[in-house]
Image (cartoon, rainbow, N blue to C red; front, side, top):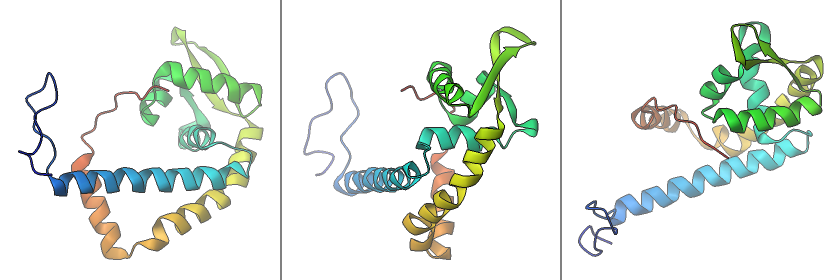
Amino acid sequence: MSTTSRPPKPGSAAPWLDEHQERAWRAFRRMTTSVRAGTARDLADTGLSEPDYEVLSTLVERPGTTSTLHEQAAKMGWSRSRLSRHASRMEARGLIARAPDPADGRGCLLSLTAAGRAALRDATPTHLESVRRRFADRLDADDLRDLLRIAGKLDDGDTSPVSG
């Protein structure tokens, strides 16, 4: 498909992707979907979902393993409401604790519990094996360098939250 084979989208003057761009975009979407779905399936055997693992692994990066909900959501690229809903489910399972934020009466602090730390420790070998098998081991050093270069070009620093 060339840029002239289709009219612009309704309400937009932007041309369609050319054939090479469209093939690359579709390959990128299939690749990211396949890798993420596979690692999520493998992780499910540990009792953690991919979002659970993401919350725990991001929270453990914080000094003292405590973060404000706002900071945690921003670091993960999630909306505060999405993180708040997910945190409620994780809190009910004993993986994290929430407490009022003394610096912000409307905010809360998220903390990793002993059970959350244990769940993360137990799930990490499975997760890393899955990441190696589905991603890292399939790429050589040149591929990884290229991917880092490409990711750097695409990462515009936009931390707009993803809802869901």
